Amino acid sequence: MGHTVASQRQIIDIVLSELHDFSHALRKDERMILEKLLNEPLKHVGAISNASSIDVWAVILLAILIEQEKYLSMLEKKVDRMGH
Image (cartoon, rainbow, N blue to C red; front, top):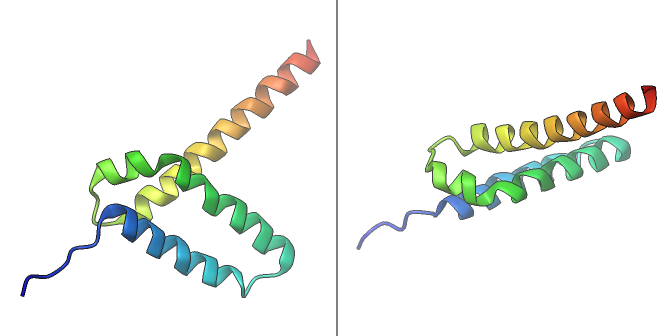
């Protein structure tokens, strides 16, 4: 019989599930932050899948960083508008 190869989406779901399990060991405030961060890669599932990377962890972390950078940029623009 042939071997079944997991799709990138299945691997992403497995990694995120493992991280959700990790969150249960955190304090409530930290768990809420982690849960929010773990939703960020879902915005980039298509790009992550397209990367066909063996190391899904790296692209999941990059997706989180992209969303964090977008948020920081938005905050910086708001601060700049308030200062002018």
